[in-house]
Image (cartoon, rainbow, N blue to C red; front, top):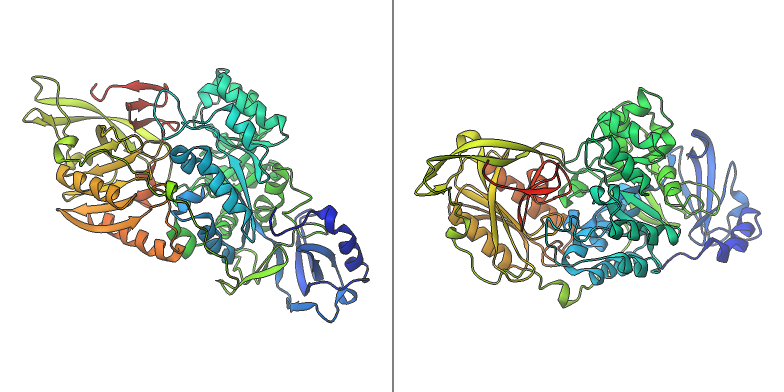
Length: 597
């Protein structure tokens, strides 16, 4: 990778530093070594670093100090391996890889395993290559998983691109591809779908890791068929039994705490209460928006949360370091403070609360006191990545009309039910009134309209339905071109004129999120890169996102991280009910269903 030479190329120098023949580049003295191999804290330890790697870890590194060696006095601080995020999507931060790294390095995240699934659904393989190349230029470790499901559910949605086994095989030869991204088409794997098994075979043939995504509570034959198909991990568990089942079948259970996904507390009891082997548990974020990473943290936030749930601090740290590295075949490369490994390290004064005081990445001090101390040059995205929102026409309020069956005065409609802090939805049924031949939402039942607007092929198509859970109390609309996974445009609102205004505005700025109320724009987050990301600084995007969330609250929405829920309403691989460009999707049955019962 760019910026760090292979262990084999620098082994001679590491040996010379460890034995005192050659001075180290950097020495950290007098720290408490958090050893994730032996799960112990070893006091009064020195660390010597050379060529971006650890050369010596022991009681006295004076023999490695030369005239040009920088020395840092740890003064008893804990020395923790740099944190690893085992599964995440940079695009969920609404910023580029560069800006995401800039934001999370001060929080101690020095390794990320990213799945650029979102940009792949918009730009295909060339979008993946863009993010792969940007990741290679980072001063920390950003490994890329090749997206596996584009579209995520063939036949149930139309993405902006399609990828198959040939594309996966091609990408496996790229230098920074670490494996296959989450295999979301779990019914396809369990039924022996040739495309899915072909992608998995191409990945295994390259000796790389297959990421999982079994988003079903069914732990029977469907689950067993999926595991037999090859996925090696899974982050979609929400219950204790989910984590237990995955680990017992030889998978790694990835426990996630994102901006809106709170799945650690229930599942970590497999370790804290049942006593299962913690080596097979990994912490991750999956989706964190810019506001979360700027204001609350990243993997340090997840580790603190796991500890707060009763997890031994050393075990929680293992779940965010060595466990992750081992899972991806990188145990000899990162995830621990040990000779030969990349010199990624945090200095912290306390393990349970984990304040990140100093961050070292690849042997370089990159952050101190919560602030970045290095410059990371901006990465320039080409024009083809910016002109991606193509509605084909200007939308009007009439595009959001929902005609009732002829002669009906009321209908029973299928309604998508949002579940706070979780990715799954409920399949609800509600009785709704008909006015002038059109079905209308019902604020008393917390039912408003949802529309999916096609934005890849200029078709001008609009699919309409109903959603419950946002609690909007005024005429308003929210439009977003972040709409997992096919990333058309999702518009949710109580007023059709506002829905049209918000949708047209999101298209006008080249993609983003717009909140409109009573014909007035309340908030705008511009995302011109693939309609998914901004190249502005994360703190700038975070401020705009905070204004967007505040605008949603002003419209009556009280959900935690309601925008994250909004962006997943078209995710047709997670039960129970979703919307796509083809209509309403019953994800439990993996088939289309009618809006009216």
